[in-house]
Image 1 (cartoon, rainbow, N blue to C red):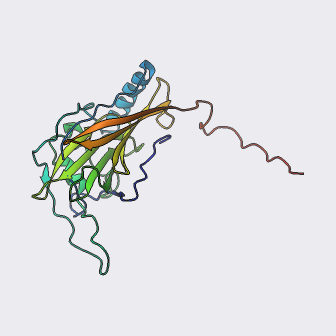
Image 2: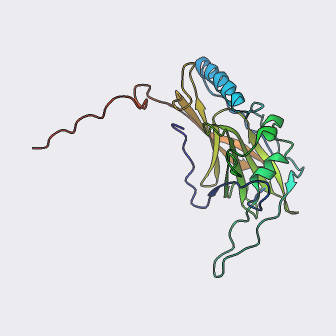
Image 3: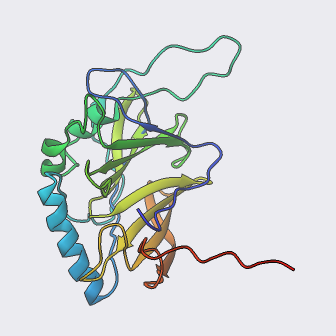
Length: 244
């Protein structure tokens, strides 16, 4: 989707999560982040996009407010024990689909509608990296729609001492995607006007969060407006100019 950019953390790794019957990745924590797409036209576009997400049978329950980290474990997952010989131990893999489906902090509609797009491939991306300063890698999970790969939910999980995972951040809004960038959580939200197609938003909000005192706090916010005159995919390429 246009304008959606991922973080550049060298220590972060991203996977497409397997189905519930397999044993994959993991991480820990507890909180909520408000995401607001600016402008009246943008809000109208988000309403239209919300209807689109509903038609795709994947929906959200709106954004969550920030709050202190929760202590209630979400689900216990068994990480893979396989370690390649002669290499450092990799980040343990947790089944992100199972984690989301078993998390009461995730909107019920998102949990119920999370199904494979094809075969056992779920529309879920997972990233592992350092966000909360714990002893184990943290996990960022992005849930998307199958048809357009539109993000409808971003969650951060922190691993507790007993191996369970707690939800420490949730943003449920159409066209949201979270990444890890040099130890910060970067959440990008596409901004749509009333007549914008899903592939061509009017702009984006890029919000940076940092973990401090058991919660994520917003540290930076950037709004980008996209040029409406380019990127439609129409028209012929210009002829090359002859060089003398």
